Image 1 (cartoon, rainbow, N blue to C red):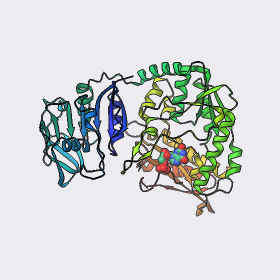
Image 2 (spheres, rainbow, N blue to C red):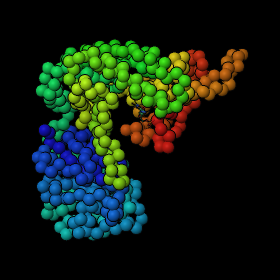
Image 3 (cartoon, protein in one colour):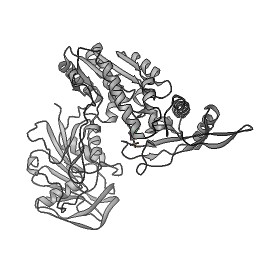
Length: 514
Ligand code: XMP
């Protein structure tokens, strides 16, 4: 196994970000709940303690047995992690006079300390805490301060232990990456061997060992994760991988045929199943979004299973599960609020084992692996698309005609985005996390076209920027782009006479309308 950094999660919103930063240093890391340190794991080269919504004085604050790792491997405490180690070590943590939140500048920095090598005096850091350390434990000394925070960073004289009360993982700590590099590479001794190329090489080898001559089934969605998973497995076991791609009729315009062609071009053994009639029949007259989701979910499993059952000698089901899908996130009570999902409704008699080769990767790493595997850039950069597809973007009941209207409008919008070059040379599509059109199928408004009065549906356009879909901001699309798309949709799509742009962020809105 590779060297790894363990990040113990005390419930901070930025814990995943710490993980991503460590991976960007070509170093493998695992994010684990604060009380699940892997005692005895010889591959651990360092530990990072995350922030937390708690104060160390809260009766419910998360506690960890520091002796499991302090003094054994280098440790870096961040925010709560720093305060917790100070508190447990005999220092003092008190309510800050004023909440220390936002940008601050380092007024003194001990650059002879290996953690702070290369960090400049005046460097901007990001603070976010209500408590502050007012006295350090014996044997620790300050190595950086800001105007308001005397112990912005400290180090131990007796153990390989460092701590910062600011957040080096966030973008606003301008030299945060340097600090993390100092810790991960110089202090912990990472050999920085975690890369897309090494991942592909070792994973292909492992898959060959694990799967032997067995046959594997994989459900393709057209999205990045399942596609990269398929190409990786194909590299390992070739035609013993059978992919199934179900068309539920709610895909984007021509998507089924285009994606099938792309998959075949990649050399995948893929079976396309057009089940759209069945889905349309079961969705007729249904307006409730949860009901739509349930019907689509149920039918999807049934169609997939029927197809999978034809591959009688299959032993494995592969899934494109990625790391953020698996990280157990904690809520304020310390309970796990998200645990690993289960495979939905596969018949037991199929006796399939689960194979999830991307389970350690973040989204950006999946994309790098896709590139390493030679997949086309357009497939790698595809926006996320919900499993129930356009069904959750038609407000009202679903008919083939309504899907057609939305497909046309959506196609004009997305094609325009794919071809719009921004002043910095990047395509607009690549600046946006996700975009799509929504049909307000039960709403009509008056318009005028030529000499005719129209009474047709509005289409809403949605585009958001995000890093993980948990939060999102509406994308500030250029006016000339919006103007052209609006014009094209109203002129070309029969049934639509008005276009709106959704300027809601998440929260409080969501990305999808339903
Ligand atoms: P919301 O609407 O919750 O969406 O802000 C967050 C992200 O999840 C996608 N999404 C779904 N994906 N099945 C999926 O596979 C679904 O039912 C579903 N609902 C939302 C959404 O497109 C966005 O990327």
